[in-house]
Length: 361
Image 1 (cartoon, rainbow, N blue to C red):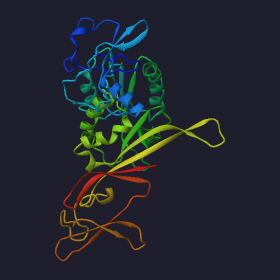
Image 2: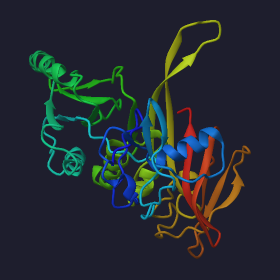
Image 3: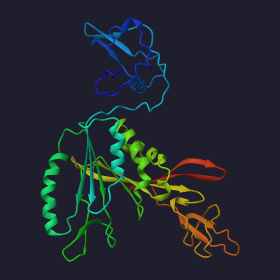
């Protein structure tokens, strides 16, 4: 059953809603309106009222909306999804930019496309793989010609959501994106330019393994693309789904926002970045991974539970000590610079782990 409220895309399974016999024959007519549970809860929050009986069905009589039945509506099901969940069925475009030579088989964008195929037809889900290499002038001219045709597709307004991936090396000396080899065989690097995207995510591992984010990307497809949750609000939840990601890399999320300047009527656009670093009180104190081997005695995973301490200059952090006999090497992990927030997911037996959310990066 689709919600009748304007702008609400939610649907509710009619098996879970007890439909009164008095309106069951006319439930599909235009005079009967249905209000979903999420809209009911939203109205309660807006009115700051106590929980009230749920009347889902109303009837329009002479232009006025009245209750279609005297008894409140009973929901026989249980809450299995977030109340804000939607069913976003609009057309989706996924574009995967791949540097020539990289293998796209089993890639994360293909995993996302496969996960979304269950919800979409070929007409409402389009997946493109675009290979690029513009290190030389000849390759750049060919790319610009191809890009004009591609821009017409990407710029089409028929797509409700557009998702872009870029698979490319980093240039080893500068860290910029690798664009290919020039005529002399030297590396060509490019810097990302401005792009009008709602969110941009990146991962900070020096040797990033994309396989660790496959569960993250599937959860993204369901929670954000299909159910319509705001990416920024559920980003931490998506990270928690990824079992291997926290130990492998930090995660960054960037959002373009309007910033009001004092004395200026025009709002300036600024990029707001947030870094998520997984911490473990004994393995990754303050989000800093401890070495597998002790730098002094080479024993493996010999670190004691970390303790709060300061370095010689008074900077705060944690100190971990090697437990190997006759070693006692101490490793210092610095506390991150403010502003940051500790989001603990588990505390047990003096062992804590969770995320460090650092804004302003």
